[in-house]
Length: 143
Image 1 (cartoon, rainbow, N blue to C red):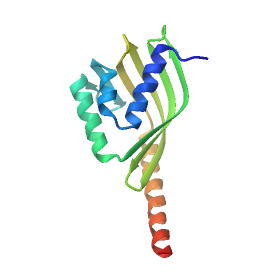
Image 2: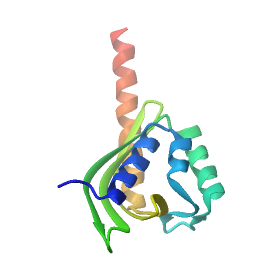
Image 3: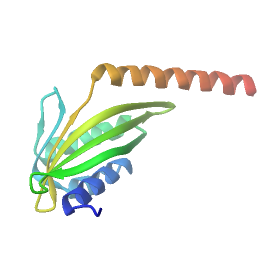
């Protein structure tokens, strides 16, 4: 089944974030975008969204999105995603489950709201740090 135009916009938006191309993601966002990692307070407007994305890019050396499912509902305006996000901080890779809700109007993302378990994210970073430490120790012994 072919993507709806709204799904294609969400895919392009997430692809831009994976490339850490903040300008491309901003070009796909509405000036009044609302971005929220529930239960944190939302960032309202493109300037607040840009500040969060550029801050994120300073600390994260890589970001991947593994889509498990994506669907358009409400006449295509709302796009739901179930995915695994991967955040990379140097040698640490943290993989965690996320459900996202996007609203797309006139070809722009007007809402991005993600839901995830903070305990799961914390555990993912602990596992990632452990793997990084083991990798570093293995490299040291091999050298």
